[in-house]
Structure formats: structure tokens, C-alpha cells
Image (cartoon, rainbow, N blue to C red; front, top):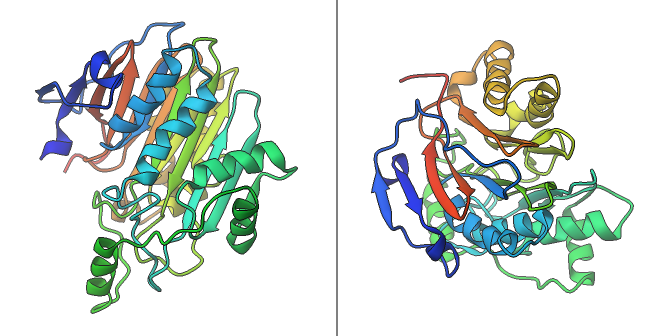
Length: 327
């Protein structure tokens, strides 16, 4: 499968849109390429993170702020109708409504989020405005939509014909059961360190396909889907959000790093926390990414199949994350 391979994207391609210039087999047992302390670094979830990292790198390579980079990066996935787990073209809930969740966090500990948001293609940018223009962290539903419209966002139909057709096919049986590594929960989460050494993160999703109307996952929840501490590092999640919420995985990873764990060790412990506490963990996929203040990264997941994009020195590599279950 293509998404189980490693792609190497050279810096020239990142400067003008991503093209895949090299392809080689990737072992999930191998850790990520070494990053260089003091240099900008980007890590994001899933194959669509490659193009997202490309947009983020354009900002970082010119000395831009990590916060601007992560917002610009995940907006690429939000606007891509072929990424059917984020933004425009995302799978709808079981009532045929596309509802979006997102959060963002900067180097100062400021955070903003939206959940259960309809009709807005870029919830990550609405989340940033919640952070910057309100005294709150999260707005939801109709209130989030009104806030977005008041701030110049356009109301759009986010349900594409492709997504509608798949939903109508699903309605014939109407059973909700997450399928491991099928793109019905492939949140894009992104963490970045800029040239000043500052860290920010972003997380955005359309949530689980055919979820109950009103369901919100971990992605807009600070400490679950995303957490950043500029003194320590950051972490983010993807997969079945209920498991992440029950264990506050991203906050846990950052606190483990604060107490001396490497990003890789911390991601592994967060997955093990799920294994120990949640009896039916085998029924879901969870993946974590992390980065510490020095720019070292880690990633880990429950099942094989979770990949992530790492950009350092202008090169992007797509890796398979090591996993707990070896089937």
C-alpha cells in the first residue's frame, strides 16, 4: 500500500507545492530521522500531512512564527475534498451533517477551539480567532457559527457529492462501528517549532464518520487532542477520540516529557495507558505524535498503519509509526 511506504520530499518541492521525488520502503521499527537542535521542525499526522507540512514550511523557512505555520498547514487538509476526515468533503454524521472540530495553541499557553461547527471550511482559523478575540477557549455549534460569520467567514455547503454518496450507501445498514485505519477518523494534528525555538500546535477534523449528531471527539479539547508547553514540548492525537479523552493523552505525554521521558517514550506510555485502562482498546486505532523543546520527536500507535510526516531542514519524510499490536 502506498500509505505504508516512506516518502522523501526535497526542499525544492516544498517551496512550490509538494511532489514526491523519492520512494523507499519504511520499517515501522525505525525511529525518525535526527533533527537538529535550534532548527525549525514540523511533525503532523497521516499521509495528508506531507502537503500540510509543505505549506507550514514555507512560513518557517522565512523565519515565520510556529503558530502561523501550523494554522496554514492544516488549512491545506481542511480545503482538500479528497481528505475525507477533515473540513470540506469530510464524512458527515449519521444525519448527513458535516460537523467540524478544531483547536490551536500557541507558545504562550493561549488556546482556542471550536466544536460541532457547521458550514465553515476552516474551523482552525475560527479557533484561532476564539483564542485571540474572546475571553474563552471554546465555542460550539450555532454560537461558533455566528462568531465565524460575524468575523467574515463564508457559510458554505461542506458535503461533497462523493461524501453524500458514501453516506447514502452507509444508510442502507446504518451501523456505526469504527474501522481501524479506514479514513473515517484521520484527524490532522500538527506541531511545529520555529527559528526562535517557539512551539505551537493545531488539530482539526470532521470527526468519526456517521457519528451521532452532536458527537464531539478529542480534537478540540485542550489536553486531549492537543497540548503544548513552550518550556517542555507538545503532543497531539489522532484516531478514536473517546479513548484519548478518557486518558487525556496529549497532556499526559507533555507531563511525561516534563519529568524526563523522551518524546518516543512518552508516546508509548500514553498508548500503554489506554491498553491498561480501556478493556476494548483492540477495537480502535489511536496514534500520538510528540516533539520536545530541543526538536526531538516521537510517535506511537495501537495498531499498524498510522503514519506521520516529519519535516526538518526542508526535507519531509513520511514514516510508519511503531505500534503496540503487531498483527
